[in-house]
Picture 1 (spheres, rainbow over the protein chains, first blue to last red):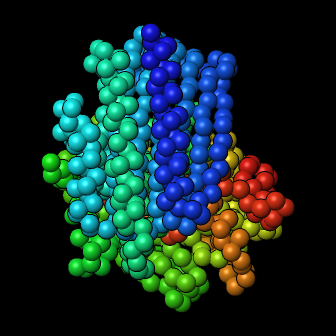
Picture 2: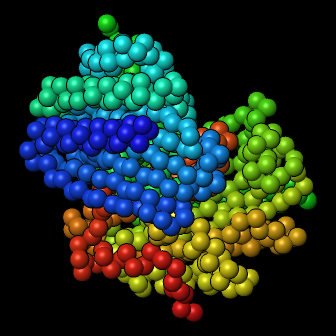
Picture 3: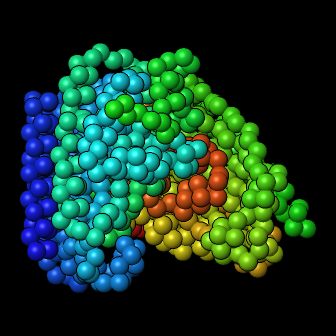
Length: 299
Length: 299
């Protein structure tokens, strides 16, 4: 039974990887795709599964990564302790993706859905969040509305939205958020793995609708040097979050994950400047107000 | 006596900050300097010293930071534990600097010299290291020769060189170094604070000679797009090191240091690409061989 559920999840993330790949190719005909099928060894040096990494670069989508993996086997005692397990083996599968469009009027997005087993414990984690660079409030409402509607049957949007606001935060930047949030959940286990599995699958199926319509809507808009300068500096904050605070990145690197697949999340071009600030009364200065928790869903 | 030594060190780092500022202005007449004099509160909310941050941007030096600080007062129990002290107060002063030239033929450099007191214990730390982007072996030899000669009276070049090779390492990148090393030391305490102080002052006085002649020599060289692309990707590794591994950055951010002054170390423009690799048989591919420990001093 559990093996069947695991296989069901693996099949799902692989399908979703293909669907998102198709959307990226549709949006950006210039896109170049590098696909790497990789294997890993577990902590004991035995076969420990692997993954499919897809790295995209193009004229419209500057860079993107859409990765799936199924990993299993022995883990180090330190890592077992970190994930709160008293068993020295684990199984995990998931999809993790990030899209950095070139046009600053199109937001960056990130999503991730995973199923984890440690010993006889199962749990799910994941979410989707948006990092816009231009104050199009209607786009932020659109993104949150899709997720609020997706969560409606399960009554968990409010809880997942708050968790997202709390997670993607640059504590060293006076608690400024990485973007405008979305949904986030971890250690999800209702006691019925099949029910949880179906919910996570259902949620993950809303990712395409939450993001690509924004891409379609904004990707041909004109932008100027100031728009891009703001975007590149905000990408800097994105890098700061991912390398200083993101648990997924840290766990991945500390558990001898595949570095190139993990750091695929970093944006292609980035800028850092001492005390960077956008121009007074610019749309970018306005945008800074939005990197704090706010109710966006309008259902 | 100790107060006199502390004041002596503070005066020294302030003088050195001015000397290095003069060199930067000499090298790059286009340079813009932003100086911030900041104060901080200690862990108990009392006056806790402050610093002078100097941020430079220009046509020749893309960005640089030359900071000094004198901080003191109550520290958190966690921070005391981290620095190995059983006293809840500290005093620290130092100079920390980073120079990111625009021309990829000129290396990036970083140096830092500090004096720390926790309870009745004193120690010194610091060093200087080089991150070149072009395989000019003679420049690497030059840099190490200056430091080998500086260390000669104290017989510590070999030890400090090894510590530097061990410290500036991206463990998540198969132990590739950030650059080609230099010298590094920490928790230095011979039992005679005055002797240690004079040594650290003497070493720090060699920084200008270790770097600026390389700047003078290379800054007008031509470079092409590939040279720059390699430089921007190596700056990406620089960012990875500083945010994932650098103890100074982590301690600074975790002890509620001044974020803008700490992250002044990040390069102005950066690139990240999935599995970035320079062209086959290019000087940049050659350069990759040098990011591992090697003997450079030729005295």
